[in-house]
Length: 479
Image 1 (cartoon, rainbow, N blue to C red):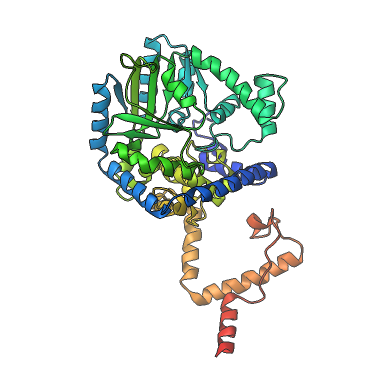
Image 2: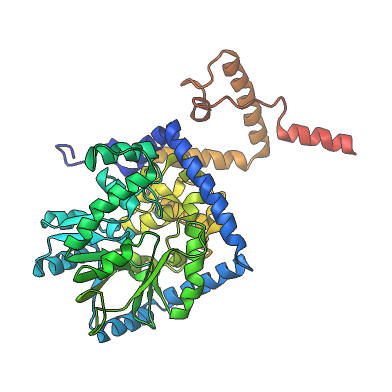
């Protein structure tokens, strides 16, 4: 902040986004890593979908389940709470991130907790829980391998499902040699073994385990967790206290709904038939049970979700099951990467959701889209993502938060588009002017109106005739 108390314009989310997007899209190593990972995902996803007799029917069923749950959210959350409490668990309703962190830190401090192990959870990233635990003198270990890697790098997750997607084995090897064991090679098996040795110590030191929840099942009063590494089960069964932190929208009505949701989530997330470990937890350890926590807490986080629930037009955004499929399909995400968005939820779903959760400072994310509809076509619960991006843009403009220069440009654009003769004249003048500029070798310079495209690409060839001229000419020939 400056002395006057105003924020530096270059530090605003929109300016940071533009700066970081330009840097990442020009980073060829980053592009190579992401393209390789996305191509691998695309192939796995296609194989996974082929295992379903009717993939579209499965999507429709998932959409119906989530619509029922969100439309009756109060009913199903209260049912879930009642079931958990009846088995000796505790449920806390957190209105915002501050309340959620205060409750969890309070539980930890009352029980003398010094070490916490965390299973992968986007909601704990959203509320910045690890930082709050550290402020209270509590060491928090991320135990998902990807989350552990980005924790060592002091970075947020890059992707909803694969937090360290942006790194190759050499980068990870360099990191582990610096922070874990100096003599390690870049062999993935050796690197994974080194991380396992370190994390196993944390599992058996920790007094508290913290997890997220892929789903919370109302009729069973249980949380459902899906992992591929087994760390989720260790986090929730070895420490004497387990705290599950979840958004209120994760509720589903019935245990039977998991029969559809679990395999669809796995296929959309990684292309697997089902994740390696699918776990249900409904309370603390009972007499005679071999493992499990002595205390079980569920923190239900609102943090802006109720405002979105009240918006009937955009409520279905809460149907999201955090599979990451829309990120993988999005051409914008593939070019600029996850960290550019400046939010825990990147990509199309983050661009829709974040302005509702974090306010108008993130309204620019709704324009970080080509509106190609790829995100909508792959969403396993059929959220109409590209139309919600348009809704957000419309609401942003109607709120009067656009720059005067932008409003002037679009008024001019509307005036030209409504007058065919003016449009034709403008197109002819633009083609003539660009030919002159390109002939003088000025493509990509400050004088080039197409500089945004041409400065990093081969200039597009200019047509000799406009489309309208060609249409008239070819129509006459056809007659």
